[in-house]
Amino acid sequence: MIAACTFMFLVGFHVQRKRYGWAAVFVLLTTGDRELIEDSWWDSFWGWGADQRGQNMLGKLWMKLRAELRENTSTTEPTCT
Image 1 (cartoon, rainbow, N blue to C red):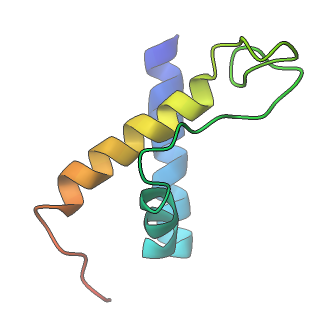
Image 2 (spheres, rainbow, N blue to C red; image 1 turned 120 degrees about the horizontal axis):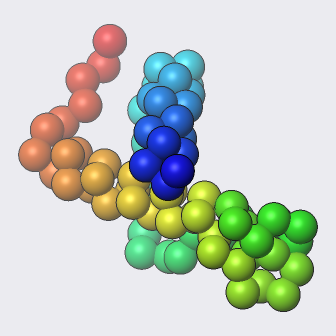
Image 3 (tube, rainbow, N blue to C red; image 1 turned 60 degrees about the horizontal axis):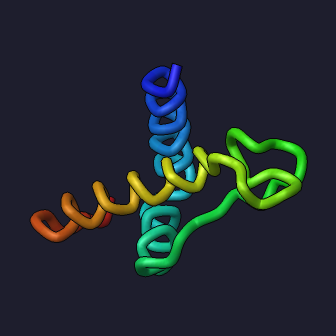
């Protein structure tokens, strides 16, 4: 289940990246090392839930993607098209 959700999230991100260009990547990378939290009071799987003890899977996916982008962008420069 998690692998399928991760795949769909990454596909969605790449669609958005094509739509908004490198701006989406830039915004994500400028978050630094901050913990990213889906502030959803009703969803304790994707967000942190009403008691702020949820799994925050969406935040974890964003942080994983940010780490992968850092790794990839440190070796290749984006090109303007």
